[in-house]
Amino acid sequence: MFDLTLKIALVTGASRGLGFAIAEGFAKQGAIVVLNGRDPQTLEKSAKHIRSNGGRAHIACFDVTDASAIKAAVAHIRDTIGEIDILVNNAGIQHRQLIADLPEADWRRVLDTNLTAPFLMAQAVAPSMVERKSGKIINICSLTSEVGRASVAPYTTAKGGLKMLTKSMAVEWAKDNVQVNGIGPGYFLTEMNTALVEDETFNNWVCNRTPAGRWGNPEELAGAAIFLASDASNYVNGQVIYVDGGFLSSM
Ligand SMILES: NC(=O)c1ccc[n+]([C@@H]2O[C@H](COP(=O)([O-])OP(=O)(O)OC[C@H]3O[C@@H](n4cnc5c(N)ncnc54)[C@H](O)[C@@H]3O)[C@@H](O)[C@H]2O)c1
Image (cartoon, rainbow, N blue to C red; front, side, top):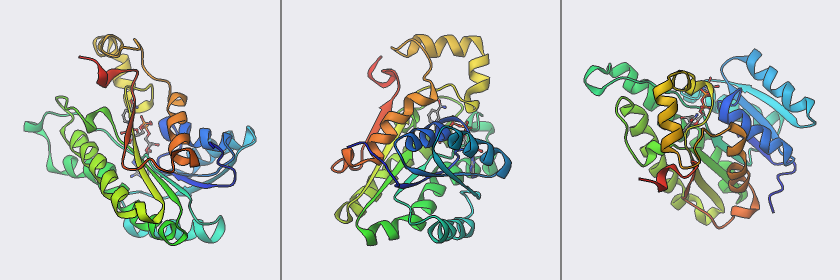
């Protein structure tokens, strides 16, 4: 039910962090993974790591905010590896600043990467899924798809929008057997959060606020991604699964 043998999975922002952990999880289930990022050397190093453990991994170097680069990369993957069965929109950036001081350029940069890019990626990949009547799209959302936090307005806006984009895609493509779902990670130990982990007050807040009493480890996100990428979730559509140590369930 959870087998992904020879499924072709494109994961954006997969050279490190949650994207890499998801790609590694897919590869262990037999998928052929395509790691996206912007630096070929880092990508190749990550792909090599997956291959050294017996997995199948390719790289696709492009910027997810660049529509023409996306189209070219998707066509290249189709011609050289095969049609994409699973798309994970994982690439994301953070920018911490209060709304009153926030430059418009930073607002747009965060929305472009975290919200418009998943739209562009799905627009490039979904038509072949619709035609083949089979496909899985997973959008990496956030706790901020549900709740706000001071100093991260563009991120919260983008992730809230991504939850609704997930539902919009799900209802448009469900009849074509394409399932579109989201994963909302709680606080995970990745480079995006290095500054927060090093801040003792914030670190204590995360550990006290999260019922599990700790940060999540990236590999703990892979199970939900494998579920949403596999036949086990064929009637699950438009949902966001929160993998958060109980955070959103607690006052
Ligand atoms: N770490 C957490 O606690 C957490 C919590 C909730 C949601 N998320 C989300 O999970 C996803 C992964 O986060 P992470 O913590 O692994 O972050 P990370 O910074 O470690 O990794 C993000 C990856 O995306 C890549 N990327 C950024 N912009 C890109 C672009 N324009 N084109 C191609 N690649 C690009 C980066 O180079 C990096 O490899 C993000 O969408 C993030 O918002 C993370």
